[in-house]
Image (cartoon, rainbow, N blue to C red; front, side):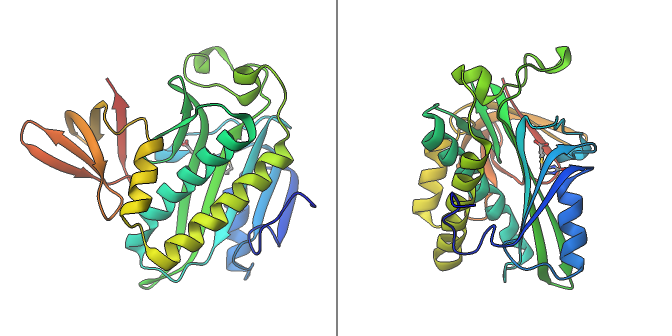
Length: 253
Ligand code: BTN
């Protein structure tokens, strides 16, 4: 597409009218040797996957449903940072295209007025200690005219927020460009203080009271920042706890 100005991301594209999940397609093609930067788009997903084993609704033509295959030469411990930098890239791309003051809900949901606009699911395929493929799945509610009753208070779309349709192609191209830039910066500099500051500026969770649920354990505190490894730092009555994104649900209070 002429909209795409990236050097690498999206130079190889797989497009589907209907598929169960672009993350699933990306993992499959990764096994067959698809190159770093391959992007997988679907008009509709019939088995969209979310974090924590949840389903993700991806109706035909309504959103950007895409997955990006990255083959980073990084340690598994760096994956948390890629989760964060993807959230930041998507947040800034949406601001750029729509002007909406969208924010990140840690680790990488994008929200507007407490309602979810974007979900991101990062999945990896590791080979011994070395990561061979990382799939970053991004679901943006773009032109959804409405949501089912059970999602009405929790989800929104760019159409509902701005009152006009938004170009999915332009948005996808912007996201890929921002993601490529953030990724290259990360490879050069790591998640340094400047990155953590930019992330914190966009993150609605930091500075808020949160309830953390990790398996059977539950605690509350104030989110105060991001650690050098990408964990959320939560100030509790018993001191500071570092929360990793894997199996955790963090809710505002
Ligand atoms: C979440 O918020 O729980 C993450 C949702 C991720 C949805 C996207 S849509 C494209 C890609 N394919 C999937 O099956 N899931 C991700």
